Amino acid sequence: MALIYYVTQIQFECGAIRLLRSECERTGITRPLIVTDAGVKAAGILQKARDALGDMPVAVFDQTPSNPTEAAVRAAADMYRAQGCDGLIAVGGGSAIDCAKGVAIAATHEGPLTHYATIEGGSARITDRVAPLIAVPTTSGTGSEVARGAILIVDDHRKLGFHSWHLVPKTAICDPELTLGLPPRLTAATGMDAVAHCMETFMAPAFNPPADGIALDGLERAWAYIERATAQGSDVEARTQLMSASMQGAMAFQKGLGCVHSLSHSLGGVDPRLHHGTLNAMFLPAVIAFNAAAESVQKDKRLQRMAHAMGLASASDLGDAVKDMNARLGLPTGLAAMGVTEDLFDRIITGALADHCHKTNPRQASADDYRQMLLQSL
Image (cartoon, rainbow, N blue to C red; front, side, top):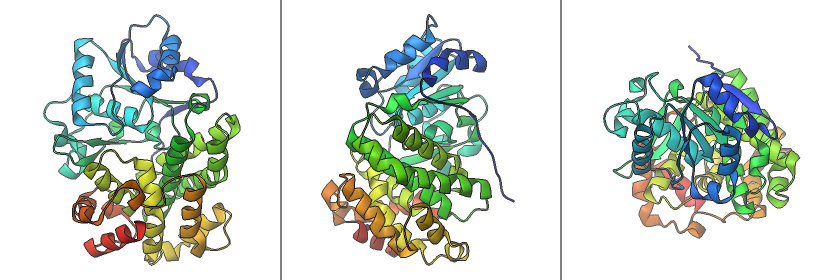
């Protein structure tokens, strides 16, 4: 049986941040905790959110790390309870939104966070007691504002997924103007994250034609506008199209992801300093080549359809096109340029085999397959 679910209320337009208070009122939030980070605060976006809330009492946790941790979730959950909050507003990129989802669990459920991790059988333990969440993305990459999952580094250093439809934000406020100040390198890295999401969800074998259509359209938008958004950061049209692509990739997450994310989740746990979107960009060519032999990919002409959406002549051009795009965007040439060495491979492979995305790849990967993908991505 196919589960097809769409998804939450989305307010999408330039200036949509002005709707934040009315969305709090709609969802019954009267005393929110804003979860954000120092960069969003420094950019003045936190203040825009506070201005939109008017005289509503607000608490602020602005210490979300670039890869959100269980320790940060604990600290924010303590603040949530101490301030008597009754809901959450995440303002930031995927890190802030995922951290807020962790708080939504930790502030309302007993026990350690790992008890609720997907690979620990925790999805069913996440109930409708979770704190209500409004998400305001300030990057165009993760799409966490419309997704049911969060990725968090737990206390034992594993980078784990937490998945439940209860974690989907009650509202996503997608305001492309909030991304206008994003630096070129971060625009490129988060944009390639969106590309990876659209491609991996489209290749995933689950039956979900609406998700396939959304992912393929998102890929077309991301591929057409990522260079323009990176080179011309004040281009509102490019920022709008890239934010839509990010949202669309995550709307298709319900199909599952694959080896790109198994590897990037694992490596991100081994070295939390590495940016998730950049890792996805590095792994995409090797995983596309590996997936080319999958029966479902061949039967449905998945690679050819992606190539067409990207304006390429042939499916055989996909891997090189991604590498060329990475180079044009100024991203690293491979894992080695990011400081990754072969002595880390065993740890990365162990984590990838255990990751929740491993089983939804269209072709099951062995340890040797992952090793080859890592070598090809160096």
